[in-house]
Image 1 (cartoon, helix red, strand yellow):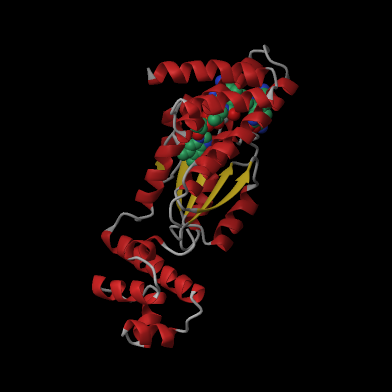
Image 2 (cartoon, helix red, strand yellow):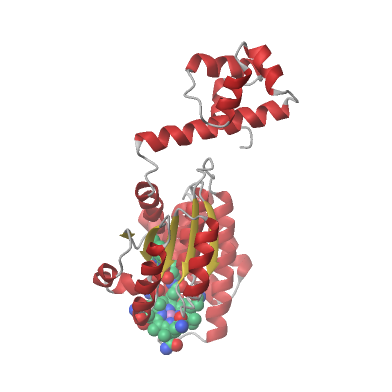
Length: 294
Ligand code: B12
């Protein structure tokens, strides 16, 4: 039944964007949401395949360039709208750069990867289409990106992607690199020519792989991340309550230096101490763990 709904949504959405009817496109998406299809599913299983279909029709000469461009603009707006409906996870404190390779005008797939990473809590710089390698590499270095997601749609640009990944891997520290795009979707064996850390055709899976290759799920990193987030939360709630570290130390019966270490994510804090801090900050333990700015 799920597949049936999705295929109906795809048909209606395709007709709406082919007619360049933005309001109708919105109505179709709203209808999907109202029938219980989750936003990420509509994003990946309605918008993306319809975009491929529109483009395919354009390539076959069945759709004029203006029609394809209008459809793309309508879909970009729907992508942004659905992204807004997805619940953004806690900030991970990790940076990602997402870009299409030099010479590549295709950017919708890269936009999808950027959106799903942002929703997953990554700090994302999305650079879009056709980014020159000798500008992209210094940008990645300056940003201190943990991962670079490279989109390549044209087989003829695989050597450019290969060179880009080589240059990125020369950086110190070298970012992790994830590749994807229509060039590899058509011929997955091409992905093995590029010395990236991973390849996937799927933006949602890209998020899981990004977490894995960046070591987010290692016990040590996970603990460090948790402590940094908790520290940030304590700091934010303390400021919200207008308290100094000394005042918080007094009302939580903890040492000021201990509070400072907690706020800097450097203290392997006990549950008992978390409970004392939560009480002193007038929040529940859960609220303190979730963080003040969410
Ligand atoms: C629309 C389109 C265009 C538009 C692009 C503008 C835009 N809207 O972005 C325009 C008109 C500019 C265009 C131009 C060309 N195009 Co074109 N285009 C397409 C088409 C039909 C759809 C692209 C699209 O938006 N897809 C929708 C997205 C969602 O799909 P996607 O890009 O594959 O991304 C998905 C995954 O690959 C993945 N993904 C993408 N990037 C990444 C990155 C990472 C890290 C990860 C994890 C995942 C990931 O996420 C997406 C989710 O599903 C594709 C066909 C296709 N099957 O995709 C051809 C296609 C990419 N184009 C092609 C060609 C040949 C061209 C032209 C050379 C045509 C020409 N003769 O002029 C030019 C080249 C221009 C250039 N220099 O880039 C070929 C490429 C063949 C190849 N392997 O080399 C394709 C595959 C069509 C075909 N079958 O022949 N194109």
